[in-house]
Image 1 (tube, rainbow, N blue to C red):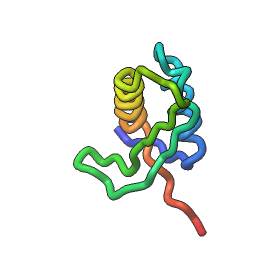
Image 2: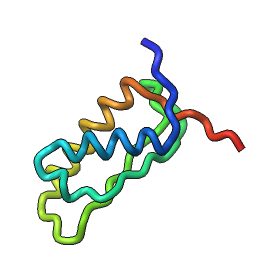
Image 3: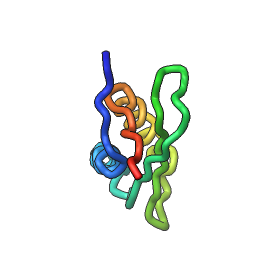
Length: 83
């Protein structure tokens, strides 16, 4: 199945919304999509998560980030930047 191309900001918005839907996700303040060479599955981006100071559930955040990344990478690829 072909993936939909999305811009960096749109992917970040979707990822943040999805991560915050997990219990403990309210500690996430931002996400950043980073472009990369396509991996063996064809995904061309990765995801970084930024949390509020005082968050004591980093394992929960890591799990939510991983699940979100997998789900979104199955559906979307990062649109190349046009300069």
